[in-house]
Length: 219
Image (cartoon, rainbow, N blue to C red):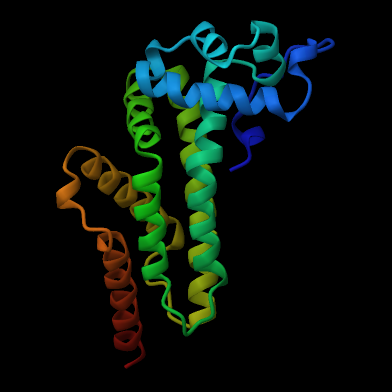
């Protein structure tokens, strides 16, 4: 999900301070944000906290990002959304005779283990969106982008395999995103209840159900 899809504010104009030049300052801010947001939460963390942790100036921050939320969404894009999109691409591009559920399960498991603190922040972000309409607008844009990308991947996959979509791709995408988020939330609190293969198993069950419906309709 390109960050430009989500961002509505532009970076501040003018010449950047010397410390802002190059990729390094942006990477340092993102790395610092991952730590600060995990420790203090999305609502409590401040821009001052992030720049202090990064050892950079506030001017450098605003050359790279327009706001705390802009930085937060960039962090989610790079460390959560991009891995998720790679799983979508795997679903879209795999040969018709290759089952993709095991690979999706492994990717889901890797995300749970590697980005636990960020997934916790995703849930905090959802809570903030439920209470604050200004936050909700940006949250809905991110979710809509994820669902659109997944729906396109599902439609492509089913066209390739020849299994008819008895349920619209957009509806399946909505359900799968909600399932992934729900399982991730459960894994954060009760990790022993969420087996690594569970997400893929549910995907396989849905796919087999669609196959059965297609055969029934054809008969």
